[in-house]
Length: 282
Ligand SMILES: [Zn+2]
Image (tube, rainbow, N blue to C red; front, top):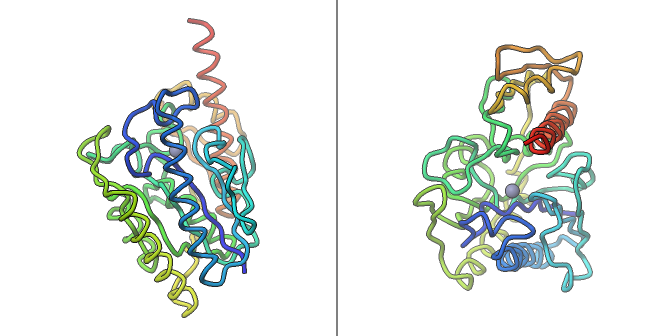
């Protein structure tokens, strides 16, 4: 039986400053050790409870954050970006999923690194009128592929706002409680490790009892994306299926969540291109 783990970094414990998050940051090596420890703890516990294969999608930034030296035999890792299905690449044939290190959507008060996919370009993403965090977007994609999310561990506000509301069957574990966008309190790694093992055990039990469900979206899926600057909307609008709503917002309709997500991923890539052009002209 195969499980899937998507790993982001902003919701990992102790990670509070930008130099934790960038490949060249002075605290980046600390952050990757933390993320690797949390991920391998969850994977080990899954393996103890019946999952003999685990696909880990390294899903922050350039998506090459996790240390691969000590991967156990039962783990396969998806690294690198761009890639189809981005943060949930490799989920297709898995029975259940865990999201680790996840964080709240852009605009959330006192929540470390609140953002939605691209802190530089995206203000808001709406799925059928519901404002979505990365958790919700990825959970809907997983749901489209019939994979339930059985556990989410990350920043406390995300768990309260989105996970408990839209996927109440998922086990949750707060890895940090934020004081501000760049400050948070976390328990010791020894304690987090114990609690995470306990949460994984409970999640697997629920999964085995059939009480975790894939999150389904109503189709066709109507997506609204509001950008942080109009030049990003100018680029998104180039796709013929996309309607420009106002200076910052575009809308489109997709036949599935997978299709909706792929188009949104293209927006994020186009926005990076626009940003690179602007930077190069300064
Ligand atoms: Zn991230």
